[in-house]
Length: 386
Image (cartoon, rainbow, N blue to C red; front, side, top):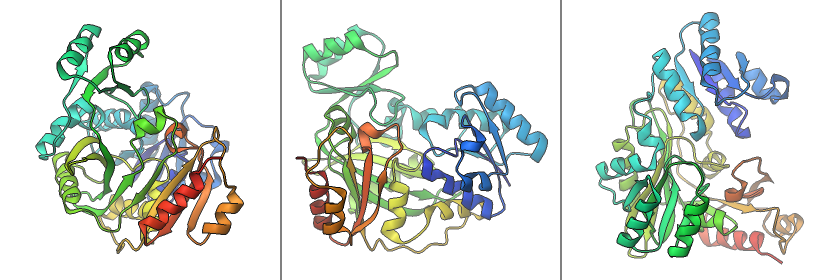
């Protein structure tokens, strides 16, 4: 099997996907804009071939890379990146080279927030009203019709970048004055707690792994208010969340992919669909999957790609929590204090190499506990500021 992996070096932990594919006999053919000698040794060892491009945004260079791979290794069987940024490039390559997986005419439903609403409706999940805006006049018209607060965000966006809460006419006009040059969608603001349904499907669309997370606040608030992020996995998933998540996976026809589906749970207990991400959750959540269940999802994804087999057994023995810190804050307790008090619960700590540090922080702790209240205590201690 020949698999093209786009950007295998970033995020840093994703080299493990390539390593497990290589161990199963796959020719892993990497494309990225990093110098080969700067790739970590484990990744260089996992790659059968590496093609460096000047910029991953240059599709012509991606085409030439795939042409080079075909000339040397024959038919391409898969293309993957597990990354929002390159989903459209993946789809174009699949279309141009007839590779299995989502094609270019299908990709809008999982990359554009306006089209995601149709999938949620098909899954019988409520969504907030929203409309792609094409003019300042339309923004003013809708704010008068719908009232405040409202949310403006890129229709094709990642990680809450350029997402704004509009609470009055003054904030609306300030947005219109400084609006970035991307297409935005205007949505009703939903007051509620952010929760997610996460997992992995096999080649036939069966969910072979699933879990759920609850978040300390929405990603928009984390970024815009410069707050620290804390979220943790659930050992027992609420029935309505699992049912809505499963219907959504089916509605979006997710095959051989990870998924991260976000919902708001309102004060009335209702679930409202926010967005669908057909890739692993960001940051270190892949590793949290493994820590919470004592399994290896990097390996299991490779098993599905090669053999369509998921072999791990899991029972969610732990709640696994992510606790982020930011460099621009002064915290009450040192790393030594944290480890002295909670070292028995900490399964990982280290700096975060991510362009999404505004959302997930610059340094992270991952903790396991059978008691979510204990995790909240750990997070409060780690994130307490001086």
